[in-house]
Length: 350
Ligand SMILES: NC(=O)c1ccc[n+]([C@@H]2O[C@H](COP(=O)([O-])OP(=O)(O)OC[C@H]3O[C@@H](n4cnc5c(N)ncnc54)[C@H](O)[C@@H]3O)[C@@H](O)[C@H]2O)c1
Picture (cartoon, helix red, strand yellow):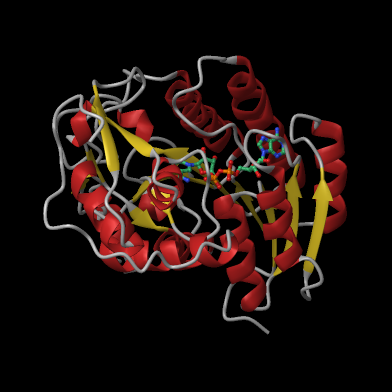
């Protein structure tokens, strides 16, 4: 028996970073999970397989390899499982790619497929991943869910904002209860190799240079993955209802999932250096297209709804990540201590 109002959860993107952690947590609480993922090669498939191998064989876990764009197949799988809740995490992630088609396929057509399944099966709650990137170059921080979000600076952000509008229409037209989660830079064990904290850890450990865009002068609201999962699990049992209308359709709500405590990228790197025990070789570069200078979550709505907000400090979160990284990649502790001074010469290969 579980303490939750739901018993069966369909998780798309279950072999991904967030999908793995969520599935792991739900299984630990006795919830049945059907994981769906196409195991695409956007990043190391071996890492996705390794995450899955930790879930496979656990009581209550079923995995099916499928592309969410294939609506009929997804519907067939979902119908057989009959989920109470669908958590949709499968997406083409990352803000920097210049090829729009994988984003259009997985994030637009794929999302429509998921919406159609939920409508057809009358799912009690669809919880889907949006992103802090929808705030674009918004300057009024902290970012509130009510802020205007009409100026995406990447195509990825445009697809995530589109998802919010698509969910809004399904919530209105079909009374489908939907919660959209604007995740703010999640990091942690079993993370994504395409994200900066992961590649920085690899490069610093191997003595290679890291590139700091905007000279490291960017603020990021880094959110430890277990904190985000805690927020997600609490929200699963809280589908929006008529009594909670704040904006938009009565059955659609959007939440910021962030630490509400932005950190300068340069400070983040310093923290990584001290965890790894090695000074980074830094190349300071200008801002990149698709990047934004600051992300900063206002989490009042989340707190008011589930009485919880993420709060792990980066020093603690990065310790967990580096520890996992070393074990997973069999990297020995460098045993080196940091020199007193860190070179931050603009444009220099220190
Ligand atoms: N990690 C973050 O910092 C972050 C921040 C903001 C938003 N998000 C969003 O959260 C969600 C989860 O992110 P993540 O970090 O776990 O990413 P991830 O890439 O690790 O996981 C996504 C998974 O979805 C699968 N997938 C992609 N397209 C698919 C398709 N068409 N059919 C079936 N499976 C498909 C991939 O194989 C992958 O395993 C994504 O929607 C992402 O856009 C993540």
